[in-house]
Image (tube, rainbow over all chains, first blue to last red; front, side, top):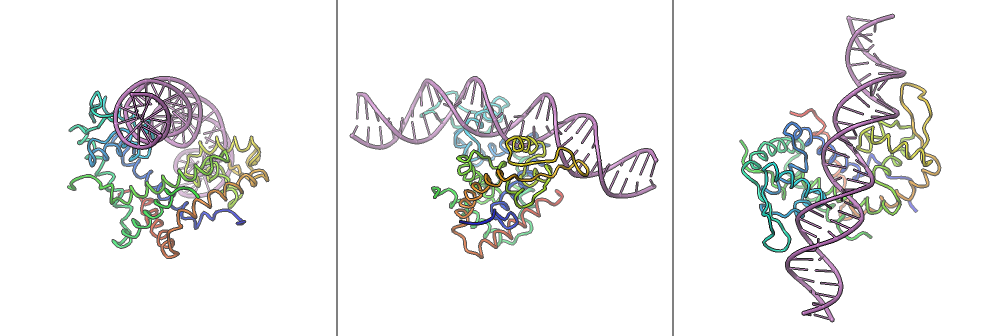
Length: 148
Length: 148
DNA sequence: TGACTCATGTCAGTAGTCTGACATACATTC
DNA sequence: GAATGTATGTCAGACTACTGACATGAGTCA
């Protein structure tokens, strides 16, 4: 039987949460002037790199439920940033595409987010960045395994 | 002028978000059977290690607003997990304490969360854990600096 | 002392996300 | 072919955490 709690000063989990929270706050700060939320930006960025993604796939990529993504997609479609076919060609999947307007909107946001990411890794060497990538990947895979 | 978006496959920011999201999901999975949310657990764990913290300090430690923490504290007080003086001894600060009941409730949650953290760092060597701590700390400090 | 700034606790309203539910379409299995 | 399981899109309601706002108390400085 272990004694005592989890030492927050040395816990990797708590540090991970701190870093992630700071990143989220920094991204919100630069996206707010553009009238964009993080989920909003994530959706456009995903569509830019993987055109034709379905709503469910976008939801997984942006770390929200497909219901939440659906609400966002309807707004983005209404505002002319994305297009979806009225009916599914196969199954129920509705492949989504960026419009030119959506691409323009994304371009500003990408620059803003890039500046945040550059600031975040600014103090790291190339080796440290590679190490961070490898270690975070290992932590991610371990967490995704079946719980003991 | 930079061209193209942010490559999600190599972005440290996206990887950080993935890892944090997986950690959150894993913690929710083990805390749900105990009828506890992450914020709920975080509040108790903070109080265990730093008795007498104010609501605002707890909010910062748990990464929520002081308004949200206030709602939670009122519920925890009502249910007998924490106690707060009816009036502030100095300023407006209401120092919060765990009750024995709160301590018992926390003990189970701590074990559950510890198992998640152990699984997360299970594939890492001691050197890698130290490296992760140093690198995440650097990223956190960089993000907390004034925006360029 | 008085003006100013800052931090805290709290109330109210709002926005974003979640859970629950249902219908539909494909894949797998017997 | 029928049954089952899995994945998707969507609607509705509930909930969580947020922003905005206000009052109060302490510290700072002229």
